[in-house]
Length: 183
Image (cartoon, rainbow, N blue to C red; front, side, top):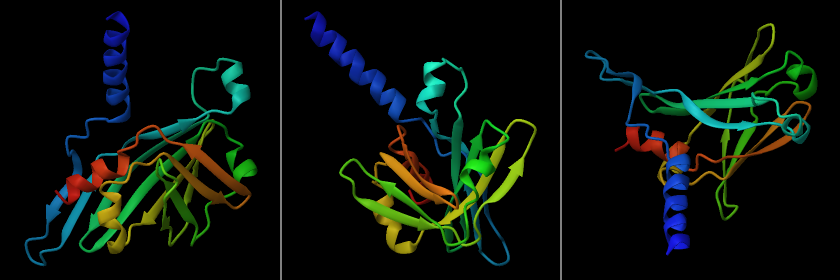
């Protein structure tokens, strides 16, 4: 009986960790009264984080990389806007940049892949202790339906200095955002 109760509590906790309550919060949600053009931006929320094994062994509190994102709709154009924040001033030396035309590969639990591409590449913003990569990835109309139910297990991205794959634990990240924009 106790093991059954622990199993139920475990499922409840996992469900809470994997599914954040986005509650359809928008930073912008307008329709131009003259042109009828729509502009929507979902709230920017945590997507995933990453720390190399050496950093985990040293029990450093903060993650090496933290990624937040939102979905932006400007009339018929839809994009995933991601901000990669590296907690080191040397990230650009190690990773390079995200060039125009780079594909962001999204993988689900069955290794099905959907690619989103950036047209302009990433804007790099440096501070004393961090390097931020701010990047828009276009979501094509043909991918919207699939992405509304797509559970993201991992992403991969080619920086100019190498390929990186990251595990994602917020499986419903994109579906939560897209279901706000297209209820």
